[in-house]
Structure formats: C-alpha cells, structure tokens
Length: 282
Image (cartoon, rainbow, N blue to C red; front, side, top):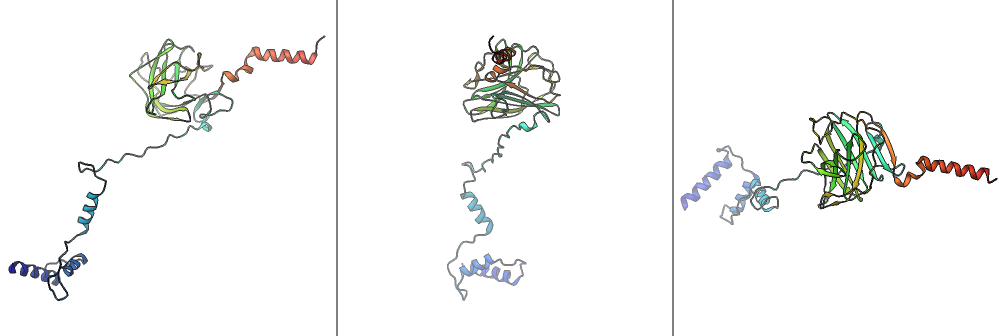
C-alpha cells in the first residue's frame, strides 16, 4: 500500500515539474486539490469527470436514443403544397377553368393547368369535391377508350395519383402509372394535386402520346375508401376543341348554372321579347 501511494505521488510530482511533457489541466488540479488537504493530507477524493465523459453520460441519458441504443432517424422536412398560380395562365402554362366567371384554382368547380418541363408535362388539378378529380385524353369528345389521370382522396386523408382507362362510362384502374413527382392535398373541401407525366411513352392502348392534341374530358366526384365512384355530373364537360400542350391558353367554360344566357336559343328569345316590348302590341 505504501509503495502504491509513493508511486502516485511521484507521478504527480513529475507531471507538475514538466518531465512528462503533460500540462496539468484545471480539471486535474481541481481533482488533486479535492483529494488532498492544504498540507498534502489525504482528503475526500471525488471521481474525475472530463468533458467527454460528461457529454457521453448526458447523451445516453437523453431521449435521442432508441431502446436498441441507436439514434432515432430524423425525418426530412415536409414542404407544404404550393398553391396553384392562376396569374401564369395563358403565359407560362395553359389553364382551363370550369365554373363561375372569374373563378380561380380555389373557387372553380373544376380547374386544370398544364405546362412543359423538359421531357415532361406538369399537370395541376383541383375540384370542389371530397373524393376525386380527373382529366381524360380523348380523340372524339366521348367517354370510352380514354387515357385518364386521376387524383383520389383516400380515407387516411392522403391524395394519390392514379392511372385509369375508360371502358364505356366506367374507369378501370391501370397498374402502369406514368405519373411522377406527385403532390396532393385535401383542404377546404377541395381535392388538389400536381404531378408530371412524360411527353412521350411507348405506344400502348392505355397511354396516349401527349405530343399530339386531344380533347380534354373533365370529371370529379365522390370516393369510397379510396376508390372512385360515378362522377357528379351526368355529362362531364369536355373542351370545345383539341388541346395542344405547345399552346398555352386560358380557357373559361361556364358551368351549367351560368350557361343559360349563353345558349343561342335563349339569346334569340331575349331579343324577340325585347323587340316585342319596344314595339308594343298593334
């Protein structure tokens, strides 16, 4: 025991004299003072705590480790859904609005935009529904044999992009989905989504070549457990002419409630009635 104590005291003497080339740290000096009295008498010896052991103990005691001792993975931040900009319509992207005159992506019954990005076409869709919203590419303005892209709101609150093929009046889901960079949100009782699709795909019955012009079919409706049901309108609106992704237009289509005064027959009746009231009866 005497030999061990003498060895320790010799080592301390060598450290303080600089023979070992190790400069005592304030922590070491504090530990020495805590272990001896003013005259070198043995005193109460506290365990030495360097900065590393302190950090390690605090880290292990924290909640940053799982039960297995591994750090919890940090989830990447989720970017909020960027609102659709209607100010770009007809300039840097094409837009089709269906609903009340002057409506936008948040107030139209149905809204669609498209723009070219490299070898892709980016589509944005929004509709006043809690179920699904879709666009179909047709060669004849009629449903049946059409390539359809739809955004569906499921029971978990997510909006997913699906690929369909119209068989008559019904949409059959196709496993091969050309959509990528998908985004979607359900907010204020509206389903809104954004996705990209390649301009050109190998020739296939269920996929059209977007280099070509097509009539656009617009539809939306309810969904049950993430599956689409019949659309809200018996005769969904369709574009008056073929749409080309190389021509950015801002097209407005009045909904049924605003079509009354736009029909030729109604205008003719209004003119006849006005003429009758001005001329009076004979």
